[in-house]
Image 1 (cartoon, rainbow, N blue to C red):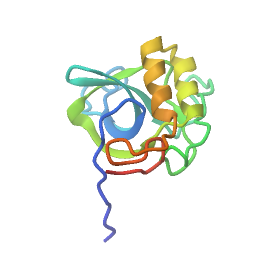
Image 2: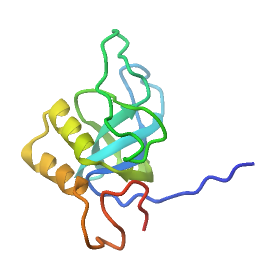
Image 3: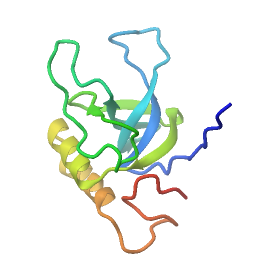
Image 4: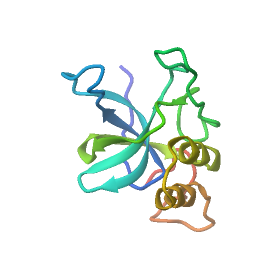
Length: 146
């Protein structure tokens, strides 16, 4: 049996994590699907996130926006932005750390979702590699843990 390591989330904007995301339009009775997301803004007991997917097309056939460097941000293969707007998830549904946005993913999320300046600034700060340790880890490095 394979043992999976658990890397707890830091809970900061720009972090790429695994979270349980509901889709009440397609399945109102569902408890949600576990998928990677980018944390954008904490809003009380929920996070506003950009969902990520491996599906390159919408149901309508339209193309989704690709993630420029999936391996660099902690994903294990090609990925795409789920939609063009942020989705809310409960803070309790944020499950584990995968990595951090890089400049290209931050810019893609900012532009595709039309984020306000405060959210854009937070993502860009997370994408900038620091020369010093921040909270005991290097920021901007995929897979960097506590």
